[in-house]
Amino acid sequence: MSLVTRILAAEFPADQSAYATDDLEKIEESYAGPSSTFLVAEEDRRIVGSCGVKAESGQTAILRRLFVDPQCRGRGVGMSLLKQALQFCRGRGFREVVIRTSARMEQAIRLCKSLGFLEDGRWTLGSATLLRFRLRLT
Image (cartoon, rainbow, N blue to C red; front, top):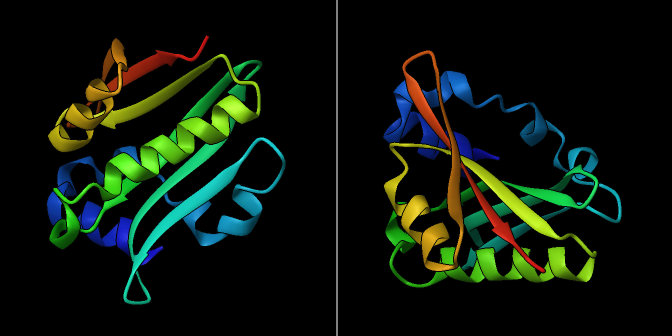
């Protein structure tokens, strides 16, 4: 999906090595199944946001590819995608949701924290500092 790769290249070039894009090459396959989905936000027939959900293990889902076009930020697109993803997770019986992000992705971090996600891990991968946030649904 060009939205994600374009944002990574333009805004987070130092973090690109921490984000493999193989799932984006085959979105239908990567996010197939009853415990997975890939949400997109559109405006004027153009994709302006994305968020993927996959089962990570047992009762835990992982959110991936939460990105919003820079021209559409601050208009609720990310919040809407994140709320839809959480609703999907609750509907599938997940008890918690995790998201991993780069420390440089400050807007995504603020968005997750605003919905109650708490940081529960931090590590370095190359030049990127990665963070893991967790939200308990039950």
